[in-house]
Image (tube, rainbow, N blue to C red):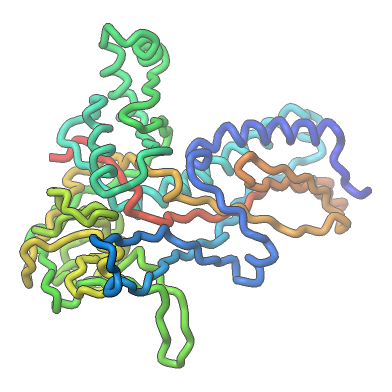
Length: 423
């Protein structure tokens, strides 16, 4: 067979693939959705995934007046990330098989990094829960605030994770290292800068963390009146002017904020709105704390897309009541916006496993077109392909390692970021 891989190369690829799995720190701690690849091709590599239902309950045996429609929300997820690491080796370089192996290992590490960064960005740029800490990271008290904001809003209390920048993680490890009565945990913290589980969160150290810039844009307001145009009503589908029906992505909402573009606001900024209080998603009871929001995009001089939408139930529709996520205690035409990222710092994502998803993809490549192909699949179902082809004109060998995947933040109200040293 033309350009067939040797047994040694196949074994080496399997060993490298094991390292690839080890490097997938974040993707090991999110949900994996494995769609049928033929179906994905026919659907343009986009599929709509259902969000969890939030049901209501009522007092009494006679429920005649309470039989109402239930709105099923869904979000689009797609296989849209094709990462490839290609290179050339000359006949001279091929004499040293060790160098070839080192290049392959480096390529695999880079692809693993690409996947982790994609997951990191999905959480840090869309996660709507925001924990602001005035001081540098110290330990339990910091993580306990992540636990509190999740519990207050009804996020499941299992499979929770927190990834910290190296400096923030080491700051927490330092807090453990100086303790005297926690046995092995103190020893690991001192010897390895290891934190482990804290307040119900598995913690991880990031060698790369996204930084969110400072935002001080005073004077911006938003209309929170029921008729002010910023109250969101969830809908499962919408009908175009031409009659076609399509699904609606209810994670986002475009709102009017006068002067938002001139104020320099950018995607990733976090804010609260005066008197807009978060509620528990199931009981609909107020938490006593302001709801946190994220800027997804600036769409015009006075418009921005935010996450999550303002579902206040002011309109009283069944869908609003079912998916209410906040309450406006004092509706006003000029409710003040307060920015939370008040100093440039690392964004440390925390999430509940089911809220983030990775979608493995697969190619169909010809095996009889002159290129040698070897495939491998990680524990997460991610396919990695190595190809090699010889060029008789130059004597060079072309190699590439590829992976195809997608990531999705299915429920931004079940994940968010914590930032330290925010005055």
